[in-house]
Length: 178
Figure: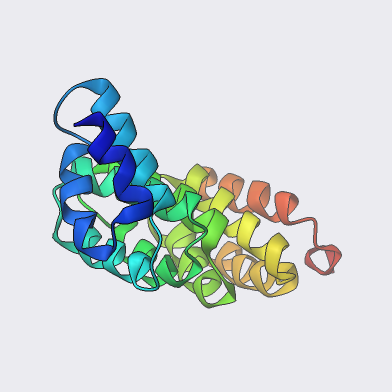
């Protein structure tokens, strides 16, 4: 079984993703690891899009593994799906989605993450980290700062103001000081 799971990375295509996803959370630890490695190394033009499809249809434990695989594959096209999963009912899925989104997200996700940081108290630290990573990588620190400053004007609680100020500091955008 180990040899078959390992071979799927180079011999398989998107049709093996569902099987690999299932094996990442079932079976012996070495088999799980082999399935995870094959997901990351899988070749094929449609592999990333099929992983995103499986992501939407999988149970939470598999979703976490698929999210991690997408991040390792640098599947930037998965960012919209990851943004949706940041609202999952499962904390581990939300956490994995935010971590991957920080690596893969684009300027298209900045506004949504800023809104989430301002209005959703769950996982604010991770949301702020993802927002900061995206803003630095895309050169959109000024846009992100502007959105957080707007939220700061209406922030009603001390913890929220603290979170927004901390994230603004992490953005290191001088325009926030004006």
